[in-house]
Image (cartoon, rainbow, N blue to C red; front, side, top):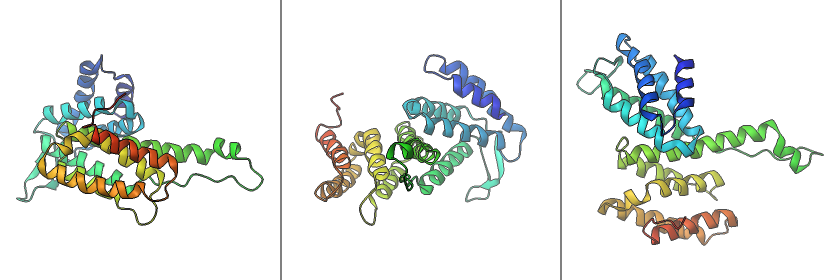
Length: 245
């Protein structure tokens, strides 16, 4: 299963989206004969890994998740998961549950990484070429990919506004000086979903509070790169989320 799904996801592009989606959905449908939805879980996991690794295709993978949700057979079930009335969760509801769990687990785990410092007698260039540096960069890239993917899932109605506010609050909730990963993730998430959150009265009020916090941050001694990111997002909101580029 893993090999087939990976191969299909590698081939997926906006042009062949329908055909490749169909191939993967047929594999996911094998879960009809299982008690624990393991094939479906595997498909979700692989889609997640792909989406967070290739953030520029996040919208396409989110669209694929929406298609999975809409076409999920009610025969697909997981006997270990029940709703509050004790009924086994199945079909689209099960898919949504798996997806939500996966988003929360990955988001809670976080992706703050310490970039390796040059070792004694090692040049800065050598540290940048090290194995540790590549690993740290990969973790950071997937963290940013996750934020964008979560935003795209929300835009398609797969995740609720409440969850988005939780994500924004978590990214704004730092004890001391925020680190680069948090600021970069925050601005990426707001770029993706800011216009949507601002479009409701309650959302707009909460956004005002977030941006007050962001404006206060700009007045602190942040590294200039982070300051520019925050000023950019403030300007973007002032421009009603219409970006120049």
